[in-house]
Amino acid sequence: MIERLLPNWVSAVEASEDPPDAALFPAERAVIARAVATRRAEFTTVRMCARAALGRLGVPAGPIVPGPRGAPTWPAGVVGSMTHCAGYRAAAVARCRDAVTVGIDAEPHAPLPSGVLGAIARPEELAWLAGTGAGWPATHWDRLLFSAKEAVYKAWYPLTGRWLDFQEAVVIPDPAAGTFAARLLVPGPDVANRVLSGFAGRFLVAEGLIVTAITVGRQQFGPADAVH
Image 1: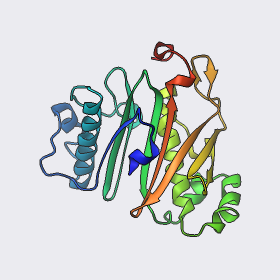
Image 2: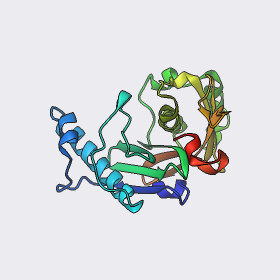
Image 3: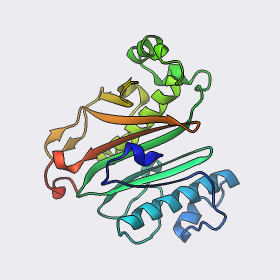
Image 4: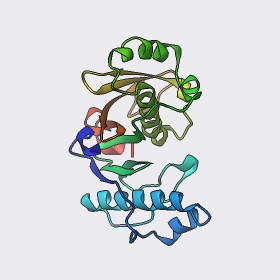
């Protein structure tokens, strides 16, 4: 499903179950040594997906351990993103020569828990939900907004190494196009002497899930060594 949102220079693998034979490297096992079974399962399966996606790029298997703020540490020359929720795990990776950054997220297609929307949404987003969003009642737009902001953060963090609060970006979906625009309200990352003021993303609602994705291609910035 996730590949429907990604360009052909991104390698993506997804899973709907946790294979019992999925294995971890010692450094990865150490990270979740005290985790509960459900956490170990999602952690393991999403790394199985990531290694399969990397293999399609010709990148050898190796440990993918969380770095600062939990972001995955990818092999040199690779950017990527991982996501997991109940019944779904996915990873998307690309060569730095093709991509500047990738951010993906998956969520159950269900309303957000009580109180969450007020914490993540800005006034202009709440106005969109009450107006345009209300005209498309088959979609839980509050959850899609949350997912899109997660994808924004996953695309943002590798470029900046900084936290981005939910309130520091405005996300407006286009229901007919299956896209969303994210406008940053803080100074954006400098990529090859160009400041990014936002991200363009895509979304899909299917099979009980909301999936969102952001990709920033290398072609719009020049040679790969401009950033990596």
